[in-house]
Amino acid sequence: MRLVEGISDPTVHRMDSLPFVDEHSRHLRATPERAWEALMQFTSRTLERAAPATFVALWDLEPKAGFAVAEKTPPRHVALRGKHRFSRYELAFDLVPDGDGVNVVARTSAEFPGFKGRAYRALVIGSGGHKLAVGYMLRQVARRAER
Image (cartoon, rainbow, N blue to C red; front, side):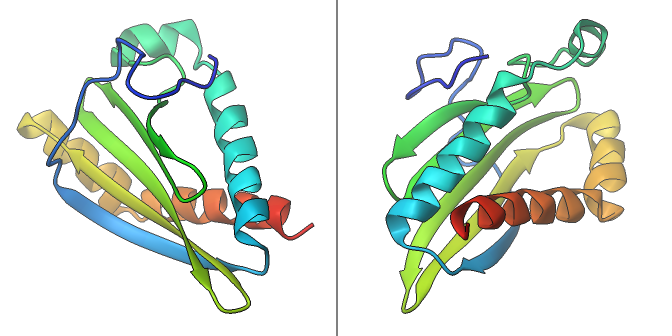
């Protein structure tokens, strides 16, 4: 999937006021421009990979990569959105200059409707899996920015 600017992707629906889930951050020893470039590289690579067709069908995944760019305000903000059978979600990244570098803040908002949604939330959020995944994302952005 290509990087989508704005809300032009019809599979990404406006998600004003999704409930807050969590927020994680990491300090980068990089300029704001370099941090933005690293974040865009990571985002582009993530969105290029569609999930396997069977997974997309079983989970009713939209878009096929799991996320699409829904908002983008260079060089400080990008929001990725998507949905599947158990959740509608947004992962927003903000870059905040901080003295000797930049803080990259990852904020997750999502809804988990119904019993199956609550069970999914317990599995993904409650288990700590989501925290590990976001930490991995932030490390990847840091690795690219601090080269």
